[in-house]
Amino acid sequence: MAGFVQYRLNCWSPLPARAENGPVDEDTEHAAEEPAGHMMEQLVSGVGQVCISASALEWALTYLTGMIAYWEDPEYARVLGRPGQPLREYKKLVPRLEAFGLGPDPGQLAADAERLLGQRHRVVHSVMLAEIRADNRGLYEAWHAKTDTTWPVVPEDLSALASDLALCAAEATAFAEAWQARSERDGWPDLSAVPDPASASPLVAAAKPDDGVTSRVRTRTPEMQELADGVAFWRTTTWPHDFHNACYQKWARENPHGNFTPDWWQDFQLPRLHAWIATRGSRHADLTARFNERAIALSAAWQEACAPFEDNDISAVTWEQVSAFPELVAEIKPTKVMSPVFTSKFCHFLLPKVFPVVDRQGLGNKWPTYEDYFRFVQHEWESADPATREELVAELTRLIIEAPGQAVSAEFPMINKITELRPIGQRHRSAGVLTAPVGCRDFLLSADD
Image (cartoon, rainbow, N blue to C red; front, side, top):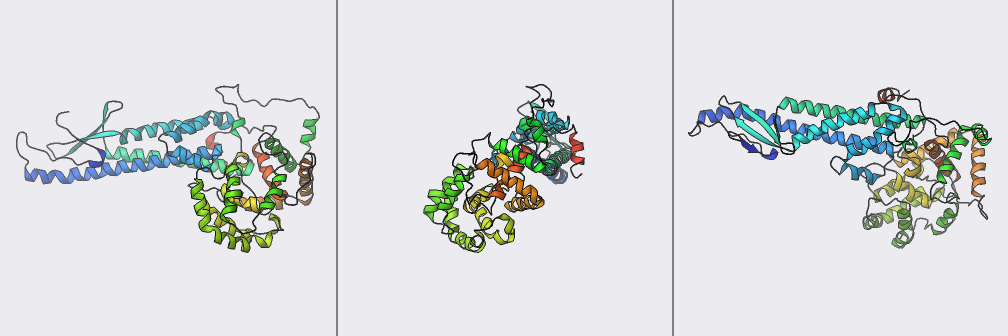
């Protein structure tokens, strides 16, 4: 490529114009430096803007997909850490989002993101070519090896691309926030129940004959229907059919009541946390080290925030009274994405009637902090009228004692378990409730209805 000098992105520095077959003219050299240098600054700035905006778009796609698919913390890190994976994961959801009733807009978001990120890749993975013309103006082009094409590099075009990437990221973020707002209001959808149009017939609500059971279900109160649906989902899993009733008796016998020793951690708490998939994404050695560093402080926090309430349940305490303990527990497993899962399980094993548990398989990823979930449980229970509460307790008691020889343990967290099962039922409805078709942009506009 005669007349060009090649430069990598990290060492752009155009050479001054040279007289043909002669030395560099000093005046010409200084005259060339100013306009060429200014343009180079614009180019470097433009490439930086493109990279920053592209990273924001990939995070927005990761956040959106994880919100819809109920990812655990390590999944966010895995997806974001692999080039191109955020877009690939989002595109997997598009057919189900469209079948769910959002129309073509999710697919358009995927197409826009793919086009813009493709332009970003061309910018980042090209070799810059620079030449100073005789009129002291710089000419910048780039060679993209993968496609073996050369393209002109214009600072204004780079800024426009960065702006388009940022707008696309903002659209994905707005979609995620609207999905969360609508789901918290109307119940969290389970897209796994939506057939993939590529492998199934169009989504149609099948009419079922009234066999008497359906009629009885329809007469239930919404709260009782949610409980029934939550129980139905629970019993499709490997979780115990007594809703951990026997476990609560065992955990009570193993409770150190604030004497948090290394032996207790290794023999009881760490194996439980591992079995409940609360340690995923962290090495046991790291968790052990952080636990040991905080063992004395945890004992003091237990005496202050837990010991006075060992005979109470969540309806008889405030977050402010008990928060010192879970806030310290959260330090044992720092997470890249805010999550209440580890904290909730650690605390639930020790004081289950006060500390409710979060499990994303059933509940999803709705609460960024444990305080949010704690207050949600309190609100759900307090908002139910006394007659409904009695009915819910009676039904769950009946289900527990169905097993031969079972009696409800004194340690069984009745309020927390009911308020865990009801949101599970909202997400996993037995009848398969479908929403009316609504475009993605309408979905965004109606999020605050």
